[in-house]
Amino acid sequence: MRDYYEILGLEKDASEDEIKKAYRIIAKKYHPDLNPNDEEAEQKFKEATAAYEILRDSEKRSRYDRFGHDGVDSNGQGFGGFGGFGDIFEDIADIFGGGFSSSRGRRSGPVQGEDLRYGLNIDLKDAVFGAKKTINIRRQETCSTCDGSGAKPGTDKKTCSRCNGSGQVRYAQQTPFGQFVRSATCDTCEGTGELFEEKCDKCDGIGKEYKNREININIPPGVDSDSVISMRGEGEAGERGGPPGDLYIYIDVEEDTIFKRDRNNIFVEIPITFPEAVLGSEIEVPTLEGIEKFDLPKGTQTGTEFKLKNKGVPSLRGGGKGDLYFTVVVQVPKTINEKQEELLLEFSKSMGEELHKHKKGFFDKVKDVFK
Image: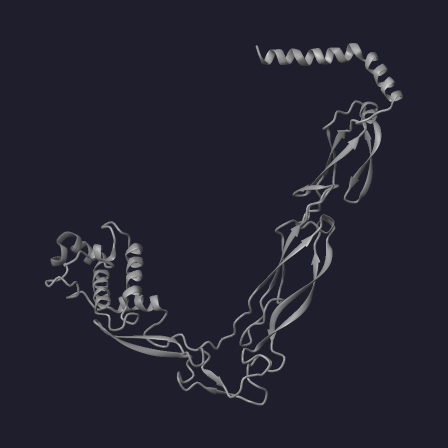
């Protein structure tokens, strides 16, 4: 007789979950319902069930591990003296979505409608200050002709004769272990327990119809990419009196050509001239709210960063705004006229000794690196 662990394809240290999972796979593959008139499949199903009946029980498994087949039954089958198969049948019923009776009943309760998802692209300005937008969606709504009943106006429904209104039908199958009864959704009424005298011409009995709708959205200040705005009741229509689903707006903020955003802070680069950097100057700084004046100090180096407090993005949860950081970049002219060249040469000569000190100090540091 084959080893029970071998039948289920398991090692001897397999866990309870692994044993159950292995049995479910084999039972579903070789169940007699799925393999009618196949003796080989029936035998494999019988072997797997016998193995599972022993290994799923810790006491039986312990005796089997110590004494083999002789430890669980005198004839080696693993059935004698250890109870029935009720729990196993429940596992099989779970595999095939059925049961021992029509316990689930017909699908008569209200069901909430499906949620909808919509992706909305907005620019940085709308993300910072908020905006009102209108979108168009297509969704299922309650049929305007039959009010969701699915029946043609003036007609009625009748009880399904196949399932007697339960929405479930029972199937009996003879197995090596006796009769196995499972239930399934009625294929005549599709689980509703009712049949139409005449279906609605508009929705063909579904009770819903597709409609295009305009939805107005209020975008709060401070949203960012991946922010989600939920709109209750703006999803698909429910079934059998159930409420509609919800609509979820997923925000995607487009990149701006001037401003860069990092959470609630804003970053921007501002070009300045060489004289402005050397002499200092009042410069104009673009912000999200307009132009701000800023006094640039003398001797500002290219790449220097400055901050304007509370000129960033407002927090969605309150608590103020972020800051704006701007970096100045000294622009070097590509071409100059003769007069400008003369002035620069004169300037360079006047700064000669000081510039020489700076260059000498730099190259002294370079030499130290290579020592």
